Length: 410
Ligand SMILES: *Cc1c(COP(=O)(O)O)cnc(C)c1O
Image (cartoon, rainbow, N blue to C red; front, side, top):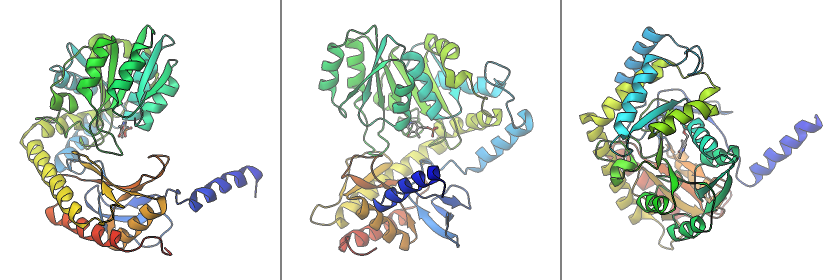
């Protein structure tokens, strides 16, 4: 074998040995709790009940969105034809940006918004554009990988602060005399489900004259009375806020937006490379998202958020009754759709996942480096489209899967 290939192969083998190798599966049907899946390399597709999608409101396969996407494609075609600064910026993109700016206006004075192809790119854009050579970025320890990559792309110096530790962050900010300070945090932590102390972060931003960048990937559509996310749920308002919301999770389509004071948005249009040097997303996507926003804030969104809350309560109550009495597996303290069941060891996480698999249930096993060593977990993600009996099936199977000895031959 080519020496260069051999090196890569050795690395993959080493991952396998540590139960860290990742495998993909092919979805044969639309995103829904019950889906036909084929594991890459396996021969037969299987019908599985899944608890790992980010489709929190169950909108990803909503007929009204498919229709809007088709209508958008008929009206605007498939390709945008260019970047936003060179002809790719359609009426649909502009309408979506206007609407999202209005949505965030109660929380950010003179709010405007900017649409991005993905949340990953939005995060790279915000941090690299605001985090110039004179800035220091204060980055929460459990931030999403895309925010970490954003700090790497920025010229700013980066300081991490301990998870949800306002006191430590206060001290770090006080010791810093940089011209520009930027605090950046997930609103809902993607592997833990807990909500950041955003009000406390904002108070610190005010005290130390800093920006507060909040990534609301898992809150947008889900949190707040009409689904506008963490800022609405917490009743916050400030010119210092820069909010990133993703549109491929609860919103059920694709893309992301940044909402901020109009001066910030004007600046991003000039300076954010992940906005400028890429082809604008298909206008049909933006067109479909207008329908998604209407669903989120309307009666259907209200009903779906209530359903999701009911499933979260059902899971937490039911699971606590079937977990092993020795405390070797526990449910993290999360009020959101993300419900991590921490089992500790990588192999135990994999073993539990395989046992659930035998029951036709699919839950993601999350291992280091995505989470700290020794905290491997099953990341249960709930959706408004899960039924009461779906969640009951998961509780029963988990009780069984965790009861027996786990360190046996797989
Ligand atoms: C999913 C996610 C992103 C990336 O969004 P995409 O639109 O999927 O690229 C960013 N931040 C957090 C916290 C996420 O969970």
